[in-house]
Image 1 (cartoon, rainbow, N blue to C red):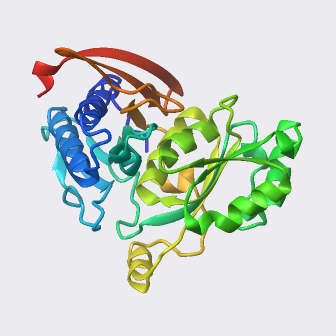
Image 2 (cartoon, rainbow, N blue to C red):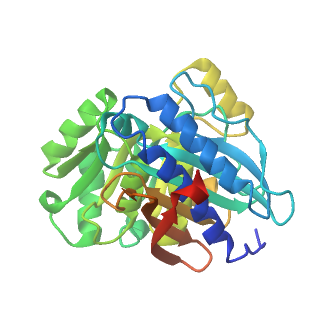
Length: 323
């Protein structure tokens, strides 16, 4: 992909994650997970529809009942401007947000049309993510090798002992054996109830305190993190993990192989990507939205793959202009 994205697109994109985060923040701790997601997604799409682009939503988060919050391949934007693919997650960590737990964020990524073609029927993927210092040493076998073997490779690449490493893992029953093996190898585990977008960003950011992400998470989150990895540096290897025959057939119908290992360049075939994330409540990489009378403040991360630019942005918003 040689098409250059307009530089101001980054700031247009962050307005969409800011709008979603400000909307979602009002649902913290109310126990209304799906309503929070729908409200945040509505605000995100309203903001995206103001951007000068011919956009297509190729993937985004689903409701708890697996119904999408939008139509697959839905057109978005004004219809003028560059033709773009978009991947959206208005709330990454909606379950923890509904319980009042920290760490939820809103995320979106764009790239030139045709560069993020992913199997729409895929739900989960197994992932390993590391930073730029470990990337040259990471091999495809790490995805299915015993965790201790992979952690020894990471430790050698970082010139450290395994017992100084920290591994980000989603706190899920499916990861019980993985967590036990990581601990048996001597590494520390950061268990998170949700939020593998934040976990992926931490894993590919040197000196973040997280050395590697391991385990099965969502495909939407995986594609978003692949965009972030391309901008920050590092490496992500992944493998689709269908839970049913229908899901397997859908993946294969899209031209992908179940069992094949894909890296970030396979999933996103261009460096011309923009990624934006805005904190909803305080988390490991971003502060959450704060409401002050008629104002709200937000904290966002903006990444550009082409220039490898990383921006942290604080903003103040007049709520009457957003509602």
